[in-house]
Length: 268
Image 1: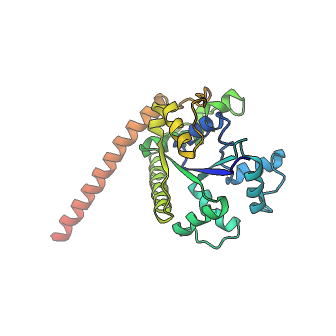
Image 2 (image 1 turned 90 degrees about the horizontal axis):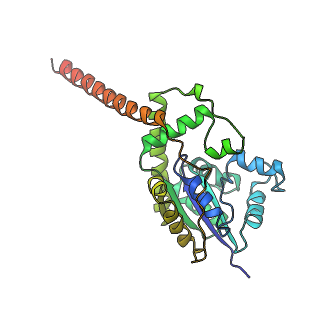
Image 3 (image 1 turned 30 degrees about the vertical axis):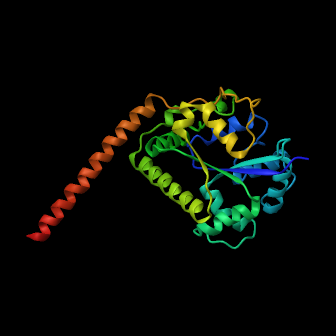
């Protein structure tokens, strides 16, 4: 008999979490870690017939069936959670909890999924993370896999550099990171940290670290590099990155000069 185990990948968009999930899934030892708490994904699972419980009618029942049927043969179940989905999880499962109560959010995870291994997928360079997400939103292309499967072709004509949008996303990802830190600290959770930068540099090494962390690593474990999940960064990414840094410096300088002028007028 296998022992039921669970791991949770805590992530934000464009942090390398999809690469990590794919690497773990293809070992056939980690279930099929996906964004099961996403409204779009959960409804799609139900509509395809992969899950018999309608998540919009019975979310706790949906979670229960997921944890029963999405495990690999060794009993492992995995999922990926974005911050905004975690905020809404307790309410969907009839657990009293404010969306800003980090301690209870952590306890809700443990109550719903049991004792779990935690992995934190994060990206150190928030500017590049923001640019990657903005480009994906504008073109509709989030992974090369979409093109390979014919799901969607990128509409590059919609690419439009937007300083304010990038800055807003930078602040969003910085805020989400602080929220995750509070959840881990107040929930006494010690996650394994996997960064985008490291997984892009040493894919097999980082996936192996994750497998060891959740307790499924073995010498016979094969890690497959997903060919279809290649980097989407290109010349446009580099151009926007340097342009944003310049615009950000100019904006800071402008605010500084206005502040100096204001102090000078006040002293007159």
